Length: 327
Image (tube, rainbow, N blue to C red; front, side, top):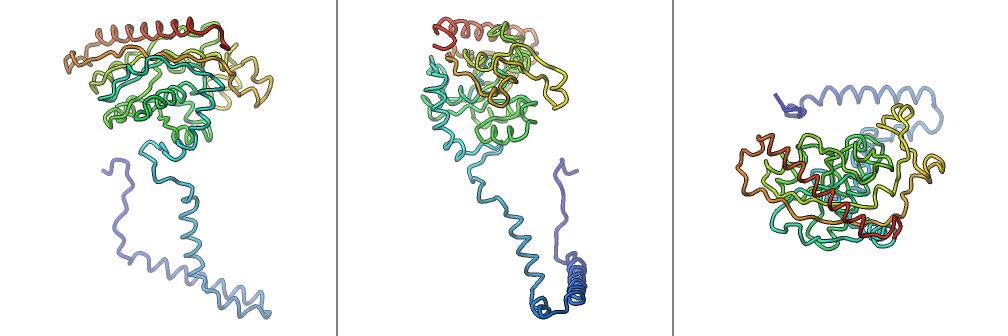
């Protein structure tokens, strides 16, 4: 077995000889065909071409095509430090001027160990994950939380590579555990698609947190859970209702109908300049729990509901902190 890795036998050069002979014969045949069809003065120049060298040059250049655009600072999940650094002026503009984000209690995030940050899902596109990570980095430069991204977003053309370069990772339990064990903070959204698909009248009412997967990951990796409440992102793309039939034809769970989309076409995809508030809650430490606590379904259910309640309180407080959707 090769565990999914392609296995190639050692190449001692002998296997290449028949292929090289075939290629040489094919090139000789091509030269004869050219001479027969174009016997004019240019025949000698055709004979002088080193076809083997030409083919090798083309192969070498094709194999390195685009490598000048790749960064040497890409980690195993695709985050590119160079792309991230170049994107920070734009992220600062969004933070300071467009969404005018207020961040509270960032000092509650543990500094001596990785943690699992858990936030409410705010809107269809992952602006919330990107801006929460950027907000924390601005005051804690040693931290850049890796935010998990839903499967259906990963499948969209051009979305996955760019999100990956900015720190986005496909949402699954295995990826969360790998990131934590490599001592990186992780930002998750346990409401999933149900949270992203909330219509405007249901905004800021947290959905169920699945089957407790977030708490189970924290218990198995022995890291604290940090609740986070995000206000403002759900109004950046307020969903009036969901259109199902045309969305399924293009592989989306639904097509959102907002005040600007699809009425304004591509322009309607731009988020609205709402006022954002991000509040960090008190960490839930689990050091006092037994190592086998991850198998206690009753404990996991109770902790999941407690976590959901804490985030709902942070969201409610964030809503009371701002004067309106725009201020």
